[in-house]
Image (tube, rainbow, N blue to C red; front, side, top):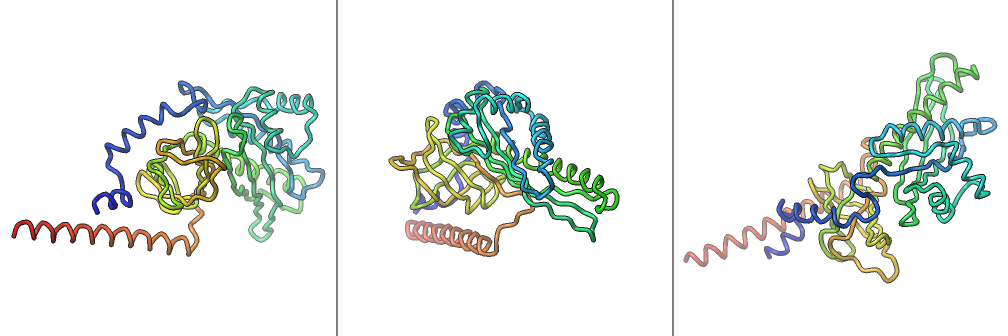
Length: 308
């Protein structure tokens, strides 16, 4: 009974410490002696509906600058990226294989593709909002290792019927979206963990939790020796660990403790879990607490029998 409680509950700090220490030995090519992560912005697809897609180039430069402001990122010049794209005769959009080829050409770790979605203009509030999504493809893994999604907004300083006011407000909204997206990409790059146990049914547990900023709904990727092993969605988060539901396991792969766990995406702070997710989470917490209470009661009864 005591062993089962340990599986469902939180692990001792000593065990977590030991596992965290081994993380440094299993990082592989993701980080060597704290070296900066080299990044290139391949392109920004403009789906805003703005004439001539004039915002694409501006967004590419702004996203590059937002990522340059992140400590630990080394961002390749947009001009160099455009030259490499021309040399490879690539046309957007690019698939994962082409993104990896571009990464090899530029000698970078990540290549990012982004999309500006349709603009929302609220004339009553005199505000412009623009959603932005981004994906980073890792050269070593050859797949998407980070996803980000944010909405940038800006209050207009003038009448939005004026084309110059509208354009300047759009640029400011894009700059806001780029900053938010950069923060999410930074989280994926810096927050890593380890698989703590073999799978329990279709669930796994990793040593990333509330203290590391993880939220319910986050998407995890389990890797081993630069090979993707499994994908999972976080369904419960404790202070220093989490439980995630497996959504896919690579063919022929087996999950083992101490495999690396990457955070592909993490819901923004303002994104609350759905009502169903909240209910499921509370039921799981109540079940775990009841399980522990039964175990304690059973232990107390056994102790009483021994005393008698």
